[in-house]
Image (tube, rainbow over all chains, first blue to last red):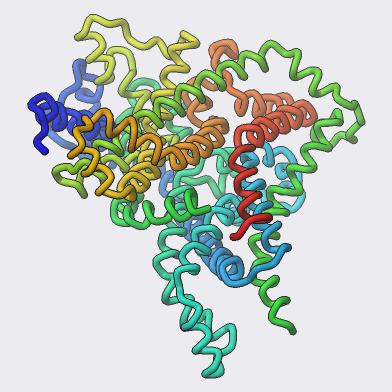
Length: 276
Length: 289
């Protein structure tokens, strides 16, 4: 079948519009981070200018805490991702291989609990975390981020482990393998894709999260998005350049990551939401 | 040690985290919502007074209306765009990998950075979008002073930020639809619109509903965008439920009132998700897994 003339003209236009809508704001941010202050405030905006690293130099000299915050972000993100993957691979295996009413009920409860808005639980957790002297620590954020993703990720891991044929395990049992060996030599390697898919979500979330970091950290454990949000508040018309530089530094690694793992993101979303 | 016990042990960390960090605190919030309490103060039972206060507070209703309007606009515009984009992308496209990478790029962006970007783009006398509006002879979006301009900005930002999620769910569902269905419909003379209307939409409906439910639940939590753009101001004009809760908890130290708002939010979320939850319950506890 041949497309009609209007379709042949309209389709490319649609693709261009979609690409501009999604990509331009990011492109513009990154581009502006290399602009001298004069050009940032130029109106209408300039697309041709002499690129400079001044904004990045200013970021390094004036906002040393931003780089400490990046370190915090990295610690929290890696911590939450590792904890989530370990906990949900173990649980995913059980939910995939074992049938029982207790497990079915707990699986349903997991979905219900997932519905609670994060801000609601900050109310009781705030005094408890203070009491335990855990306020402003990485551990609090790691545990919170992990908890909000164990439900989805157990689901994703179950979906992936479901696809590993039981016959392999049965053969291993006949050869005398125990549960630990089955997990180590069969499930671990064969569900690696699922682990990547599951870990991408918690990884991206932890790197970018704002609410919990805002409520539960004050100085030592502040993450990069939080420091950037403070820079927004500090903007008095001249600081855009530094802000763009910080935003670019925070954004580029995770952007490269998302694009690199896009096929896992798609696989994980499908497993986590539709097959559920 | 029996096998069963080991299995329970393996599933335990996930369950313990969920119960200790979300489940029990949520129940405790219910208890708190029936008490008058502040930091370091002995809670005093007040029945449903906190709920009464919240439900008769005009600021609550303003926050509710703001949330309701923004969430509905965001969810339906986003889903509509996502369905159209999924259809367009499934009909073949140039530079497939590059285009998908660009489309999902906002998924990598933190709410904080999205605010930075859009704030700048719509900054009066500076931003490129303001420039476009000006060149078209349109007034700039007065989101710092006008309630609905601010809510428009919040909606715009949310749609931009979350479109990749909806798109990916619908796109992967769309490319899973059988090709021969479309081919035979085309040989029978069905137009592109007919194919969209009578094949794509009905067959995508389950995925659309799941995406719709998830987007409702997540959009409802809206906090950072509003907090960072307007802080709920001017004069509490642009508050949403989450910022209203935050103000009462962490500014006014009224934990009882904040808890009542919190439980109202939990109930609203459960209501939104009730259809999905019922379907899940049936499949997991009564039907086959």
